[in-house]
Amino acid sequence: MAPIRWQCSVCGDEGVISNWAASRYDLRRRRLILADIPHELVVPDDTAATLRDLQLLDTDSERLVFRMRAHRDGAVLAATDDELDELIGFVAAEANHETHRRRRQRLDAAVDALRAAGFPASP
Image (cartoon, rainbow, N blue to C red; front, top):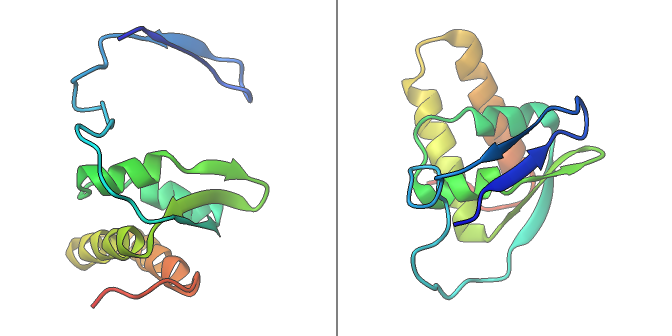
């Protein structure tokens, strides 16, 4: 795979990422899947930051989080109902196991924000 050149549009920092293919950071799908049409929801910046900080995600949910894109009101998360329901489950599970009160509150707020977007809640 070719190296990835990047540059931050805010601070001007830049660099090159190489040898990323087949690493744990390679989030490309390994096979084709039949996918539903995703919905787009705007989540607040603090929710997006909490999602990017999650430790207990599977590859599909990690892919959802890292393909969020900037929006003037936060970040756009594109996900099918099933994908978002699974992401909510991972956030809730991490909140249930979190021992630090402030981080648990941030995780709970992220669950609430995702549920308030009108998607199905986790069982």
